[in-house]
Amino acid sequence: MTFDTVGCSCQKRDHRQIDMEIRSVKGMNDIFEPQIHIWRHIEDQVRKHFESFCYTEIKTPVVESTTLFSRGVGDSTDIVQKEMYTFEDRNGEKLSLRPEGTAPVVRALLEHQLLNQDPIQRLYYWGPMFRYERPQKGRYRQFHQYGVEYFGSEDAWVGAEVIAMVVKLFEKLKLKGLAVRLGSVGCDQCRPSYKTILSESLKSLHAQLCSDCQNRTQKNPLRVFDCKNESCKKLVGQLPRILDHLCQVCGDHFAKLQGALGEFGVSYRVDSGLVRGLDYYMRTVFEVTSQDLGAQDAVGGGGRYDKLSEDLGGKPVPAVGFAGGIERLAMLLESRQTEFQPKLPLYVVMPDDQGVGTCARLVSELRLLGIRADIDYSGRSMKSQMKRADRSGADYVLILGGQEISKKMAVLRNMKTKAQEEIPLETLVDDLKRRLQ
Ligand code: AMP
Image 1: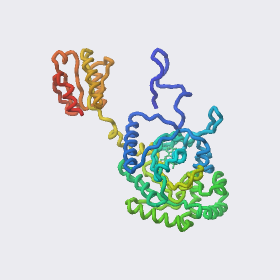
Image 2: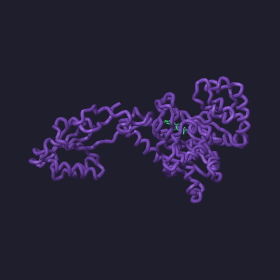
Image 3: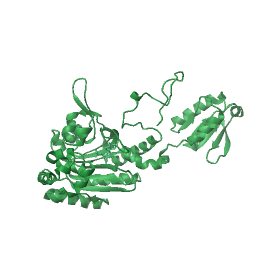
Image 4: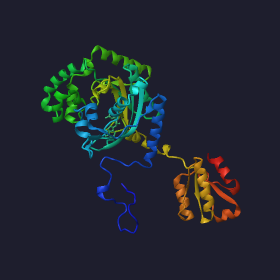
């Protein structure tokens, strides 16, 4: 990895190095060219897509009270137990960097009584999240999520619409090799009795479970399904599944969801072991995975969380949502990077400094019209300016120096055909506007 130059050239130091203590934090990344263009493409597409489904953006703070997540995400989840960045501020308040976006959005919904304005609220967000996980490809400690939350309807159609919206987004991004897994985690009526059955069968496997899962057996046995420990993963196949223990209402809801997904033309696979890593889900859960991502293969996931609002002290608010990881989407689009590179219509080359005023005015005028144009004022040789222009991928190079000024002409070179023509200075701006806009 290389680093930007630090310090001035009179200091005798290796400019590629940077003091260890001020390097970026492990698992937290800088994002710049060329990846940043992929990110921008994703952001543009995501925003456009969600907004066409009538979602509006919400921005919540990166820091929230720790209690929001312990109550919202769940005390027994890995996120709250092991992964949150928690600290006390100067006033002794316990705060956390947000590990996910749903609990903050629900907090904001309740705090600002948004449902009083409209009983249906459709919100989307976009931003950094923080989890102290073991960094690896596709898993970072600062990562970025985009997500949606639909508040105000219990209907299975709404969950199906959210899933279909996500699938269509991925189609728009031209992603291939994705699979949708669908499950149900039941409700307060059927989950407690299933948990008892599950706890019983986990007791018989106690000695083979990791220490975390041994603790989960009593407190929250469903978490065993998303344990990352290899030996636990093998045991999961022997456990009873919640889909066989759903109450009538949850069973009907699940059937209606599947019917609606059929109407939307979404292909999916029912996965009876899908529980997801957050406690707030009820009934619908889903996850989208990619075969091109390696071990960290989840592109995104979500589900229904009708009880979260009450867990946070609000009135009951039926809700369903989705969150996806931007880094993983960017990885999937990496091979198409050049598609997202911004085009450069013009590069201005100055053989000497006699035309610098004219060139500066010209470039400035074009830029104000939104036409990207590059120029280098540092007096480099014509050869090195041409080299840089070539590397920049510019469509045209304009050559303008003393010789051209005396002829009242500028030379315009088409970088694709290599054809050159002379353009009168008098009509230069209009001519370029016409060609480049
Ligand atoms: P979750 O909130 O755990 O359901 O995560 C939703 C999505 O965010 C996942 O499917 C991933 O695409 C992404 N994601 C979650 N954790 C990480 C992480 N540590 N690094 C990168 N992406 C992540």
